[in-house]
Length: 359
Image 1: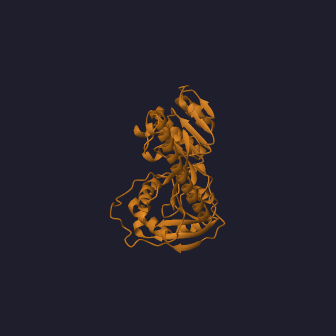
Image 2: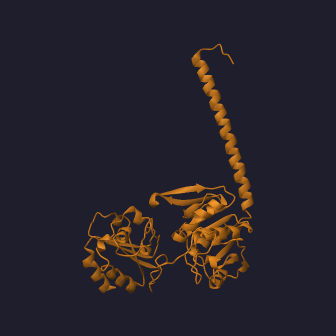
Image 3: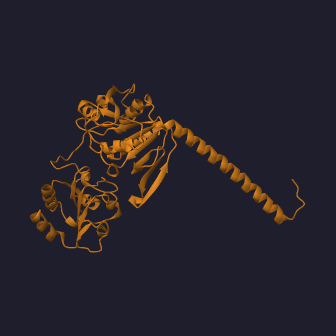
């Protein structure tokens, strides 16, 4: 096209034309998005959710009850998948949970130790024939191990560590060690979701009567990519750290492994569990399974003691949802005091003996 117009006028006309094309294209994409969203929502009125039960083949991890509560936020049917070996006792627990429509039981020796490569194949096969719209798992070390593999096999994007269910497609999850909450929308045909257990109340575990159904297993359950060799578990008579009502945690300020015995004494008197910061774990004071924080366990007990812990953001992200936080640190400017309900700015080696006497 030839224009007998000044260059400046031609430039304005061309840029206006380009903007018009871009706006038209954006409107078409938006309409396509809304039409797809509407279709999905109309289909999801009949949606059903599956919860992957985490267990040790003997009893269910109580945090799974929080995952079930999250699944119930969507409405519709909720089912449970028990994947394991000789795990009939877990199935018996699952069928008693109110609001569960059915319990799928995948029983095979290969699932005894929950090797992630084999578990992901088992979950994929067990769920394909049931046409679930949402699959929920616990955001634990075990869940994080297999959820990425399962997402790749299903060709979907996982939505991890959610703390709120807004609707069938929209969820909230923490970012930047919990300093920000992002709202995430997903339009995959199947939503693969991990749940932060501390953000949801536990479902009741009695009064239900769900049906039991044998789950479909892969023709070759063993992916032959890895092999279970052994595990080293620290056995304790104290409550599980993730579900304890009281948690007594120590940090680098404890100065030695032997000094953690003072925390153990206090925890035993209160009927609680003992935890630690990453600094204490890295220093070799306590084993890895006691670590609380961004790269450890997330807890939300009724009472949390932070003793000799400075309050780095990585640790706060794992305990700041606790109902009551008590901090003991001789540094008055320690960040832990910013989230504590009660604080003692004194030497912990003077405070702990007195505290143990008074309890």
